[in-house]
Image (cartoon, rainbow, N blue to C red; front, side, top):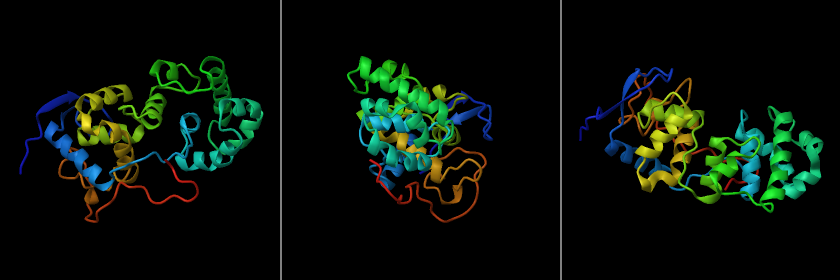
Length: 252
């Protein structure tokens, strides 16, 4: 069934081959987009390995400008030694630095992790707050990180916009914007309620494994006929947005 795809227009300058005034995906197509992603991966999950809200928070802080793989390698041993704010403080900044030195910006991250752990002990009885403003007030925690913690640890219907989500949203026409906040607001406004809980994971995995930055695998994408990206690539083999099995600890 043919669907008209120019029901909305929004000014955009994403630097990804899209017009300054590109159409937005119709709401009916948005529902179908999420339905297809859900059919492939009904229960998506984070690729960061963690145990509880605190270890998730630490993993997210460490993941800034680093890969999940590199973070998981470092935290595998770290979380055996320091899986609570009190134990992290006992480890100390230098001890933490030595355990995360394979991760980019490890000096700054070590300072932030120790500082936020101290705040959690002194102000929150060692617990991770589930209020956005309190999370964003922690050292090393911005809006994106707070959204990840709220969504993954506390099942809040939030969408964290990283580079993958930003790219997928702008390319497909799900939402358009020149900043992560603008894209987040667009996604929150246009994503049907039934898909909000897992939308972040579906979009990030799709961006990581299918809608890649330099060479998107459009030919094998299950969203190809819905997507409004104007520079689609060719190829016929179906590509799954489900990550390959990871070695080591399972993620949850």
